[in-house]
Length: 150
Image (cartoon, rainbow, N blue to C red; front, side):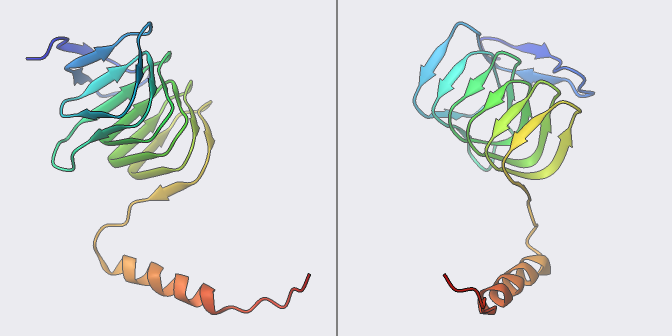
């Protein structure tokens, strides 16, 4: 068991998550973090948070949490602020107090009323024929000639 084997419930979320690590509101960390277990952040991180592809890690950013960097995890739950891109392999939940300034790449997406997003929302496409269709559409767009002149 980890140092902080807490079970916390994020606002309005139906799922209980277990976090091995808790970073308090008074804590500020500078640099890249690589996590192998689920983490709850109520403090500030100046850098990215990453988990390996084979771990089903949840990164929860509490109401007072702030990340200046990208967040890469299996699940990402946001109540605070992220100034960077989010890469959630399974799902991303944006609660009513969340503010995201960056693109969100997700498998499943939940957004509560009041959440603020300044960026693109990009649905993860599984390894099926859909990727080929997207590639073909991009190729078609590159062939279009625009008649506009300066």
